[in-house]
Image (cartoon, rainbow, N blue to C red):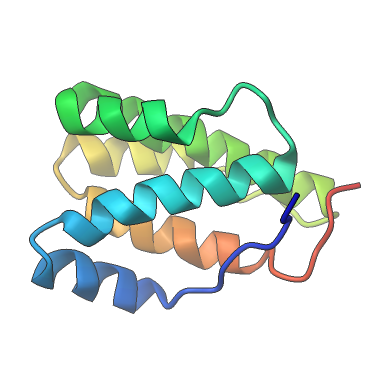
Length: 119
Protein backbone atom coordinates (compact mmCIF):
# COMPACT_ATOMS: atom_id res chain seq x y z
CA UNK A 1 0.00 0.00 0.00
CA UNK A 2 1.40 3.36 -1.04
CA UNK A 3 0.74 5.91 1.71
CA UNK A 4 2.24 8.90 -0.08
CA UNK A 5 0.35 12.02 -0.95
CA UNK A 6 1.59 13.58 -4.17
CA UNK A 7 2.62 17.18 -3.67
CA UNK A 8 1.05 19.32 -6.36
CA UNK A 9 1.02 23.06 -6.78
CA UNK A 10 -2.48 24.38 -5.98
CA UNK A 11 -2.05 26.97 -8.74
CA UNK A 12 -1.09 24.24 -11.22
CA UNK A 13 -4.25 22.32 -10.29
CA UNK A 14 -6.29 25.37 -11.30
CA UNK A 15 -4.29 26.14 -14.45
CA UNK A 16 -4.25 22.56 -15.73
CA UNK A 17 -7.98 22.20 -15.04
CA UNK A 18 -8.75 25.35 -17.00
CA UNK A 19 -6.50 24.67 -20.00
CA UNK A 20 -7.72 21.07 -20.27
CA UNK A 21 -11.39 22.18 -20.08
CA UNK A 22 -11.92 20.20 -16.88
CA UNK A 23 -10.28 16.93 -17.91
CA UNK A 24 -7.42 17.44 -15.44
CA UNK A 25 -10.00 18.18 -12.73
CA UNK A 26 -11.52 14.74 -13.31
CA UNK A 27 -8.07 13.14 -13.16
CA UNK A 28 -7.34 15.11 -9.98
CA UNK A 29 -10.59 13.98 -8.33
CA UNK A 30 -9.69 10.34 -8.95
CA UNK A 31 -6.03 10.64 -7.87
CA UNK A 32 -6.87 12.76 -4.82
CA UNK A 33 -9.49 10.27 -3.65
CA UNK A 34 -7.14 7.32 -4.32
CA UNK A 35 -4.28 8.89 -2.39
CA UNK A 36 -6.49 9.79 0.56
CA UNK A 37 -7.98 6.30 0.57
CA UNK A 38 -4.49 4.77 0.73
CA UNK A 39 -3.25 7.33 3.26
CA UNK A 40 -6.16 6.90 5.67
CA UNK A 41 -6.69 3.19 4.95
CA UNK A 42 -10.45 3.73 4.73
CA UNK A 43 -12.51 1.05 3.02
CA UNK A 44 -15.55 3.28 2.51
CA UNK A 45 -13.79 5.42 -0.13
CA UNK A 46 -14.28 4.35 -3.76
CA UNK A 47 -12.40 6.72 -6.11
CA UNK A 48 -13.83 5.19 -9.30
CA UNK A 49 -17.42 5.46 -8.14
CA UNK A 50 -16.80 8.98 -6.81
CA UNK A 51 -15.45 10.04 -10.19
CA UNK A 52 -18.37 8.49 -12.07
CA UNK A 53 -20.90 10.18 -9.81
CA UNK A 54 -19.09 13.54 -10.13
CA UNK A 55 -19.32 13.23 -13.92
CA UNK A 56 -22.97 12.19 -13.98
CA UNK A 57 -24.46 14.29 -11.21
CA UNK A 58 -23.44 17.86 -10.29
CA UNK A 59 -24.98 17.71 -6.79
CA UNK A 60 -22.59 14.85 -6.05
CA UNK A 61 -19.66 17.24 -6.60
CA UNK A 62 -21.04 19.35 -3.77
CA UNK A 63 -21.30 16.28 -1.53
CA UNK A 64 -17.84 15.08 -2.65
CA UNK A 65 -16.35 18.42 -1.63
CA UNK A 66 -17.79 18.13 1.87
CA UNK A 67 -16.96 14.43 2.23
CA UNK A 68 -13.31 14.82 1.27
CA UNK A 69 -13.01 17.94 3.41
CA UNK A 70 -13.96 15.75 6.35
CA UNK A 71 -11.54 12.99 5.25
CA UNK A 72 -8.74 15.57 4.98
CA UNK A 73 -9.46 16.77 8.51
CA UNK A 74 -9.37 13.17 9.74
CA UNK A 75 -6.02 12.61 8.03
CA UNK A 76 -4.58 15.80 9.52
CA UNK A 77 -5.79 14.80 12.96
CA UNK A 78 -4.26 11.33 12.67
CA UNK A 79 -0.90 12.83 11.78
CA UNK A 80 -0.95 15.12 14.79
CA UNK A 81 -1.80 18.26 12.84
CA UNK A 82 -4.65 20.63 13.57
CA UNK A 83 -7.66 20.01 11.29
CA UNK A 84 -8.65 22.98 9.13
CA UNK A 85 -12.40 22.43 9.41
CA UNK A 86 -12.92 23.66 5.85
CA UNK A 87 -15.45 21.03 4.75
CA UNK A 88 -18.33 23.53 4.81
CA UNK A 89 -16.21 26.07 2.89
CA UNK A 90 -15.57 23.46 0.19
CA UNK A 91 -19.28 22.69 0.05
CA UNK A 92 -20.26 26.37 -0.28
CA UNK A 93 -17.64 27.00 -2.97
CA UNK A 94 -18.94 24.00 -4.94
CA UNK A 95 -22.54 25.19 -4.61
CA UNK A 96 -21.54 28.52 -6.16
CA UNK A 97 -19.65 26.85 -9.00
CA UNK A 98 -16.21 27.49 -7.55
CA UNK A 99 -15.19 23.86 -7.13
CA UNK A 100 -11.87 24.66 -8.79
CA UNK A 101 -11.01 26.91 -5.82
CA UNK A 102 -11.94 24.08 -3.45
CA UNK A 103 -9.59 21.81 -5.36
CA UNK A 104 -6.69 24.21 -4.88
CA UNK A 105 -7.34 24.64 -1.15
CA UNK A 106 -7.77 20.88 -0.69
CA UNK A 107 -4.51 20.24 -2.52
CA UNK A 108 -2.67 22.78 -0.38
CA UNK A 109 -4.01 21.03 2.72
CA UNK A 110 -3.12 17.58 1.37
CA UNK A 111 0.42 18.79 0.66
CA UNK A 112 0.82 19.17 4.43
CA UNK A 113 0.34 15.40 4.74
CA UNK A 114 3.41 14.58 2.63
CA UNK A 115 5.97 12.67 4.65
CA UNK A 116 3.52 12.00 7.50
CA UNK A 117 2.22 8.61 8.53
CA UNK A 118 -1.21 7.79 9.87
CA UNK A 119 -0.87 6.60 13.45
